[in-house]
Length: 480
Image 1: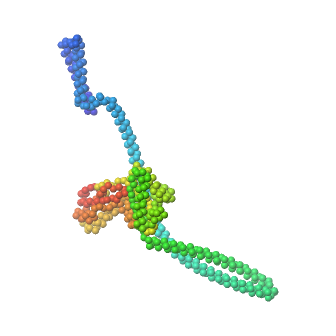
Image 2: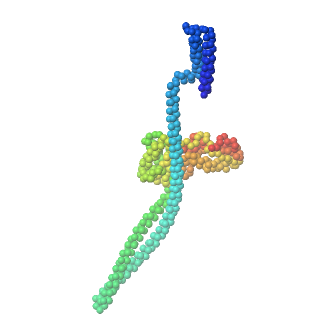
Image 3: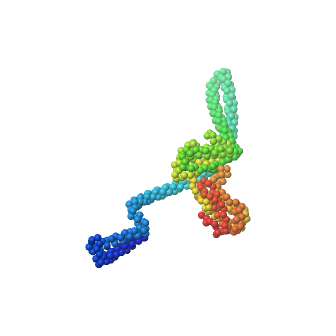
């Protein structure tokens, strides 16, 4: 804008000077009646006027070029500058389109992040449901043991009933023997006397009917006795199985709790699918060796661990083998490698596992991103430094357990569940507890404590914390 104003001003002044000087010079030459090159004085005056205006215009142009080189460049490279302007306008349009595409990708990434958080919440709800199912199974075991005691009582009653029926059978057989004796006596009476033939025949018919009834009843009792014997043997087998299962639960301690973490690894998703699968298989081999050392037994796959249905949106996943599940996870990682170039995979026990059993594990893939930056203040608290050291130490531990750790998990640090104790952790303190307690006591009442990230922390890394103490109101860093 300034160059345009300067150019207009110079041209304005130059035009006035050209007009004034040409007029003066023409008037002077006309009055002097000067004649050059054989021309008439009037024509000579016009020649002087022309050349004086041309020279002044040339000098003005040279003056503008000397003041600003852009004028010379604009005159010499006018066509090239025009092409450059067209090219720049095209590049601007392309940049605007790329910016719109980037905004669309960011929107899609945010949507994927919301979906991942939803799947995380669903997985945690499934874990809570599994814990509830474990409690229900334990209650069912107690009820089964109670039912076993009732079944044993029923067995004793059934055995008493069998004994009673056997006594009835013995009595029936005795009655049948008596009937046979009476039958023989009746036959003797038949041969001895024909006068009582009709009566004897009637008695014989009655005896035969009673004999048939007793025979049918005897068969029924034998059938019932066989059924009771089969039922008794089944109850004995069930009783022995329950006793053995109860003894196993009592005598064989747990090595891994349900949901406990066996290990975690970080995968470079930009690799080829074959390299990703190779790294995952090698990591699973290491987990199998560790589980074997902890007391787990080798399964049909010759490993101490077996990958079971993963928490993926696939209703057929539960029917897949371990190798198919690993390939499914590798395909999922490779598919999103441009959006999530780094992925963490965590192995967690699906069930409680005792010594001598193979470990069934879930594989959980997570997006691995930077959650906290180095020197970032995570959380702050106020502690009364006039208290004794034990009280201050408990206050610090409560601050880390109940405030810092849940916040870190909510922000994206993946919690670690100890497979043996079930304890949940998400970070560790690198500062000396003793030194921090001494600093708090040195400050006195209203000591301000900041929990600060020691280094950049990603989703899969534990949060390393420094505890910085200062008087309240003079904190070195404002809490986030």
